Length: 499
Image (cartoon, rainbow, N blue to C red; front, top):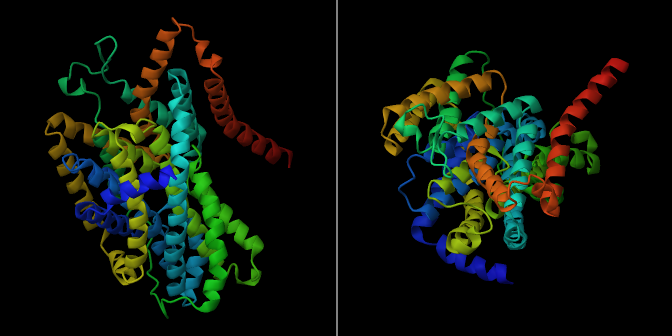
């Protein structure tokens, strides 16, 4: 009951005219960039970070959340229309959605995606409302060694599950941890890895790193691969409305997709890809029309798209209650919190209740906006796909540069933006995940601080990390998460040799 009282107070923040405008802008931008292949919500939040640092914190974070929700939906539009998922989480939607579009049923496919996103997003946000206060009560009892162990779990799970290779993921993480060491050591007052450059004494700006890796790196990567393949637009034909039979076949997949997406999205290594493919496999197994799968089954669109949006709300559970990002966009939102000197975690609910509950209440509003906006705007999103890539990415580069200079007017910052842009391009070129770098830079200094606090309290005894049941359990989970991918890979090679 207390959660609903807090939600009611948050609603009074969310319905303020400026916050409603921020939510609307976020939803529109998120959907637009979700529609454009390769430009996901993480890149959009990264681009907007430098130009929002002087805005109202509540409005900016509400806008970022709207971008996240909108981007998760927008990826389904290209997945259905041109078989090009705007987000990796929309890959499962593309399997049946594009076949429906080619059969002239693009309208019902887009409709079930929009309505499924609304249903799943609303139920999952309600789950966030009810679950978050309980997690906060648990997290308040954490000591410094427990927090350090929790961050180790975040490091390992994010680096081991992002991308195809755990080694590449760990390499990306160590790059982020190394960058996190740059600046003044708060305990000793000595500068570290700053090489006498005064601008580096205040640590590396998360916004500069994020914009460089995501925006500049993406633009360089797309430019390097231009003319590799041509994309053909598939026009939406027929009615946009779902038939009575479509509704009958969609409502159960919507609910089942939500049950997959929310809990898995809330896990440290969850993400959106796993629940969407689990939902697709489940619908294929449970369907009464197995002959439609592979030809354009509406269940294969309804279930995965519901799981996709439910996972977005799930990712906000560990972000808001524990300060742990479990996706690239969540890492960008964490950077958004930190640019206002706000640290997500259990104290967030006590120190900034209006902001956090206003954010949760705005998610319900953003969901409604998505439903109302997206069906009528399908034609506009299709036209966005025709923007020439050189114009699009040239604009992104200009926007990224101007935003970074506006936030930190320094030649050193511009040089660092260029270096991080080249690093982002090389990481994409050689298939290194980018999210672990951001997570390492943000959480690395916090993990170091908690470890040093724990060691100070125990007079330097490292066994203090294993004496707390919580930290011992979390470190065991981290060890399993680290070893398991290598074990499974070795097992796969052994079976291949045996065969």
